[in-house]
Length: 245
Image 1 (spheres, helix red, strand yellow):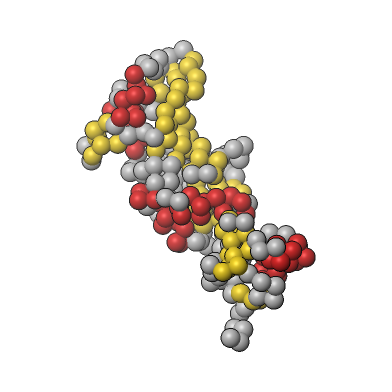
Image 2: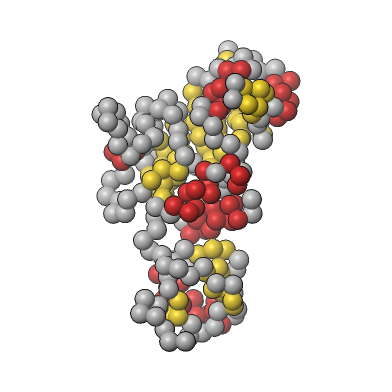
């Protein structure tokens, strides 16, 4: 089959995607560690970087250089929109010179802070947000203390809210200082204000809420108001999270 005009040599595509140098990419291909569209690749193969599904050692490699994957540490008071008609601080105010138009994956209410993912990959964004894929999200919350030991069991068992039951996937008390406790809670659903409503229902309303992880992506030491590009392994881990669901 003749090569299409937009196809390029596989080692060049891998190098552009950050897998390694062209020579290192050729070695990966020669050793059978690269799979393209379900077939073990061979030296001399050409691929379309926009449409090809490429895996190296079982991990997805995004070869389309137009696709952007970013993490943001959203400050408190910033609304989860790209622009706000009321003039409030919005996500786009913190993006700087990002050439591609990106969108936020899911939301954090204005009073909450922490990790947001930004991308122009609509398919991945949909899977990360859709409850059927069950991608967990982890939060640190400050609540009135002390927190009784039975609270964790209650949250893991499920609590009835006005729009149906909700439950935590994981829960632990991180710290207690005076009348304030810091808890970590993980859920895989994204109903509006779900953590705040859940903790309100069990008598421990949230005074501060920080999202620290979305699936395998961690907030880490990313400073408030800053963004960073996700690494190739992080992007691969996101694809793996939705493919394994």
